[in-house]
Length: 313
Image (cartoon, rainbow, N blue to C red; front, side, top):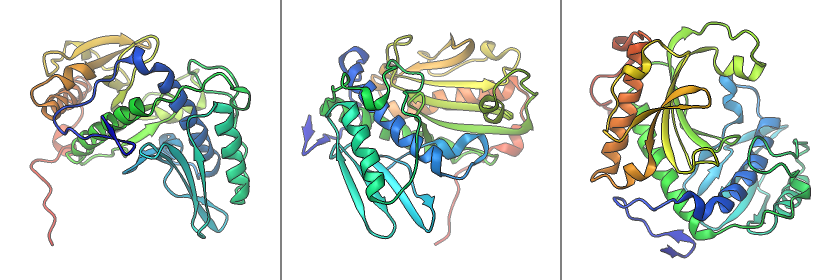
């Protein structure tokens, strides 16, 4: 149920996310998110592992966070409660774009809003590796934006982000924020062993930077045409010998070969139907990380926190 543009909250009853039922709305939201992400990519100073391109969840949707621009700051939020895009400048001005029209309209309005705020930026108008190949300004085809489906997706994102943040808190080593990669539209958190990875000869500069150090990455995505359902995943890079012989929890979690590499996969529906969804997801994250760290011979005793962090005051 949607109340005042918001999905009715059921903390222990996650919403259903059948891929076929909302795949067109998913694509629409993905394309809008790519546009916003490309603005951050163009303006934000570089950060290791390409973390400057990522987006984040906010209390209302998906945000760039503050992006420095000249003597100002800009943030862009895809408000998934009011179903609009809001651009805000630190000197006080703002612009709002409605969602639900053709993708071409969103692109036109986004570039116009940036102009109104005095933000000079050019982005690549072509979709990045998704089901659409139509340049944003020419895309009069993709118009499906079902608010109820998007609200359900945001509920799933919020549940996942909360679980990922708790998972992140148990790690003393280098760890990414919980962030959204707009190219694949997946929410992820990545732990690092602290050791550099072998050089990836022949890889492009994006891949080399992203995988310059040993890592274990957990994520969530809504599915695509090759894996047509929402799922949680975890992989380790570089691939350690014996990884897929390591056990996973809960029982429904399995090793799959996806995109040419083994990944631990736990279907969203298995989490949703579990007696304790948060516990099921936590078991998956911890076991999939342990699988990679053990197979990769990480120094776990120096990387992991024992017990809860207590803050004074």
